[in-house]
Each structure stands twice: as C-alpha cells, then as structure tokens.
Length: 211
Image (cartoon, rainbow, N blue to C red; front, side, top):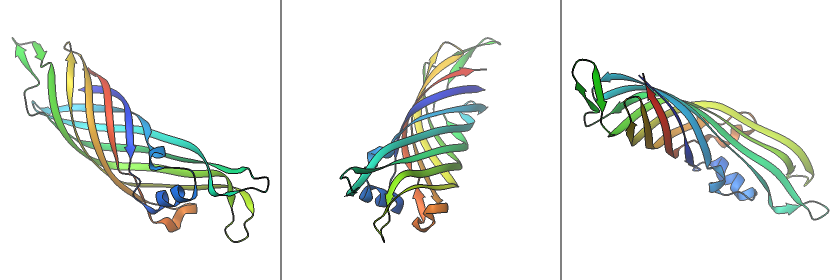
C-alpha cells in the first residue's frame, strides 16, 4: 500500500454559460478560475503492474472584480468577489507497463528508480460557485448588495499519466498530469444557467510512502 500527499495547479475549463456571463459582465478572465490543488491518494497493489487507487482533493479560487460597464453615482467601481471551489473523489486503477522493482532473496525488494504509469478513474466532484458584493439591478439600475450561490455534485472521469521516482525502498516522488471531465447542474441563484464546466488539466507533484 502507498499513501501519497500531493499538490499542484489546475487549469480550469470555462466552457459553459456561467463563465461566459461573469467574464462578460465583470473584469474577470478564464485564467482567474485557475487554482492550486491539494490532495491525497491511497494505492493498493492488485498485481505487479496494477494498483487500485482512492483519491480526493481540494481546489479553490477567489477573485475580486468590478463591473465592466457600470460605476456608482460617485464614479467609483462596483465591486464583488467571485469564487469557485471543488472537492473531487475518485476510484480507479494505475497501470505500470514495466516492472516496478525486483526481489532479492525471500525478503528484500529493490524498487525500480523510475516507474512510469497511466491511470483511469471515475468518481464524484462537488462544487461551490459563489458571488458576493455589489451588483446592478438591470431593470431599475439600482445598486444593491447580494450573495449568490450554487452548490451541487456531478460525475467525474479522470485520465492520467506520470512517473514515480523512488528514493529508497519506502519513499517516492510522483509527477503526474491529469485531465478531468466533469459537468454538474447549477442550482440555487444560478438555476437558469444549466450546467457548469468542471473540466480541467492538473499538473501534480507528490510525496508517497510505501507500507
């Protein structure tokens, strides 16, 4: 069994109506939804070349913005905060095309220094999308304070490729690229926006211990 703690960066997908809307209305861009990632993974050896995995993580971004086309009566910006957080949970497999090490005698095992792998996982991702601050009523043009929220859960599919670099028999570093495919319905204050794009490419590094 291996236990890995990992961190990295997520290049968030923004191909849905809610992102189009907030980028058009506010001083935001697709890059503002990129976020750091933190997580952990348990790996259970099924065969010499296959692991079963359980993984979870957390990513969050929060950005200040203002309306592009509106100011208040004092010619000051109308400001708000936009945030997106995600918590993915996935079960899957990792396949190692080459041997991960060799046995010496009956008790000793020497790991291969570099062990490349590919992986496929499925699971769930919960998200929270929130905006709070000052907004403009499009009918009366009044400025008001608001707090708008959508929270839901969607299915997740993940493909990955990377390598483990062993540092002795018990510890290893991991470098990995992942792509997540995920969509979820928007609810609450954003019900009319349909589904939110939760796709994203992750660059991940981790430190693991073998048991």
